[in-house]
Length: 273
Image (cartoon, rainbow, N blue to C red; front, side, top):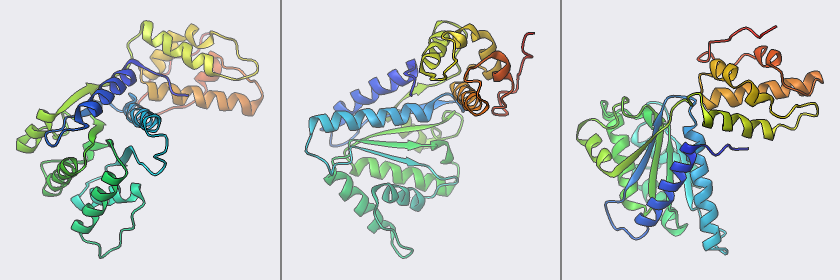
C-alpha cells in the first residue's frame, strides 16, 4: 500500500491544478519540482501523481484505451541530450537504432505524445543533470524543447535540487521562473509520524500481529530511521517478511532490532530487556 502523506497530497493537489492551467496554454506552461533528501518519498509522490492523472484521464475519456496520459522517465547519470530523448522513446515503446538521429527521435516522441494526449511528464532523478557541464546544459535544453513541443505539465524530482546546480545560471533562472517547488523532508516526531505508523500497522497481515504495536514503538522507530519514510518502510517490510519466514508472524522491538536497513539509518538503539 501507499501511505498518503502530506507531501503526496500536496504534490497531487498542485500537480492536478497545473495540468488544468496548462491544458490550453500555447506557451509558458508552468511545472513543478519535488526536492529533498534521499529516502523522503519523492519518487513515490511523483508516481502517485502520475497514477492519479492517468485515472482522471481515463474517467474523462473512457474509450481512450490507446492514450498515454502520463509519461515517466528516470534521468540517467551524466545525462546527455540524446540519452534524455532515448529515455522518452523507450517509455513510449518507440524503436531507437544506433543510426537514429536526434531530430528523428524528438519528432517521433512529440508526435506520439500529442496523438496519445499526454498531459503529464514525470522526470525523476533530475539531479543527474548538471548545468555546469556542456552535456548537462544540452540535456536541460532538450527537456525545455520537449516542454515547448508537448502540451503537458512537466514535473521534476531529485535530491536537493537547489544545491545540485539545476537552478543556477541563465538556464536555471528560466527553470526557477516556470517551476514551483515542493520540498520533502524527514518526519519530525509528532502526530503525523504516529499517524503514519498507525497506517502501516493497520496494513500488516501477520497472523499473530498485535494491533497498535508500531505506534507503541514510535520513539524507537523514529530514532532507528531518522524519520525517513523510505527507511521506515524498508525496515517494516523486511521484519514482516522475516516474521513469515521464521513462523513468528508478529513484529516486536527485538525482531525489528535484528533487521539491518540502509547505512544512512545508522543509529540502532539496543532493545529494552
